[in-house]
Length: 566
Image (cartoon, helix red, strand yellow):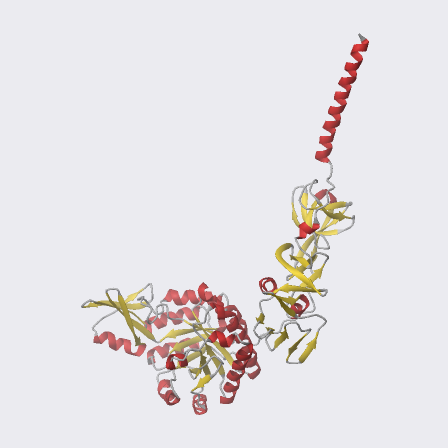
């Protein structure tokens, strides 16, 4: 009997042992620390010659590359995260960077760059083009950018801002893991005494960054001694200051439409109606060809006469009047996208202005394509340097800003220009086929608010329309004609129409039927101008402009004089 029982007992004991071992293994598997090492190539996600980028405390998808032991960023990374001021001319194989007082120029593949102080040699290629991707050396970017980087085996740590960070000490040898959890793969071992930056603290784990910028998770029980540390910003960069030329008070500018040399003779006549004007801007200069040639109606005698009347003269350069006058096609993109043509144009503008004794330059480049935007902005940067060196006021005319025209970059204009002029009209325009106000109060006010989000108020000048549009609708056909502010009252009397005040637009409005034609007019007059000036005053703008001289009335100019005197 015993012989039969013993095998059974042994079997039962073995079953119990196996069960205990199996259960113990499960417990061990559940609560023991995993020892699997993370695949760092997968963690950093880089190939040969690439470096992952940790920007502040996060990985970004962009990659840096290494060439001849120098670090390079692609152009998109630079403009998105570091500095959007670099300008690439692939046609002439040049990289430009324009500061407040100079332009640095580097040729593709060269180990040097030039500026006003001459040529400077470097130990690395400044930039190069590989396929369709353009790269710039990280150390060259540092010459003009407030940022710092540290290179590690597979990645870079990049900082563009500095502040306070929370740190803790590792109090016992442990590991930094890919995720929070004892089974998560190990990124690397951490030794007692190491200091880590706390990025996010959770219940039992914390997201941390090590001294070599590895980001992962550590158990809270392995950390102690929380402290705050002030980060040290870079000390090897100092931005150049953008100085501005400002009028002693508000700008009060009138554009003088000059369509020929003989048109200069109308100066005294157009000044008769004005009150409180301190700047006159004659439309003298216009692009004539794709090489940057300029047509000029300028007159030194005109400048002397204006100065004798106490007026500054800001000559207007445009890209459309010569084309409108002659039908000759002028391609602004072709001029502005060529560094040679663009820079020669800037030199010609400033040399002409200085030669005539002008006080300022007024740029009125309109109908630019979005593709042309980056080249136009570089033109303005380069021109601003020359104007600053010559003591010329640089003012730039702009449409009322919307998302669809933001490539005119009012934010950059607000930094580099002395005055940013908003042409506060053309809400509805000649030939648009859509009847409506030229400049309702919401259109003007909201446009100025969007401008003031990007440009200092003291640099913003709002331009008023000294005209309105008479709309004629017959069936589905809409035509229109301009009526100047100084003629609108006589016109309304002649057609025997009494307009009524419209609170929505803050303009006098009238409509009437004559046969099959519906007439509509949103009137610009002393009442509508008064409301606009009140809004401008409340927003603390740098001044007012009017389009155009010869269209106003003495009573409206009295309002402008009072506005300027505030």
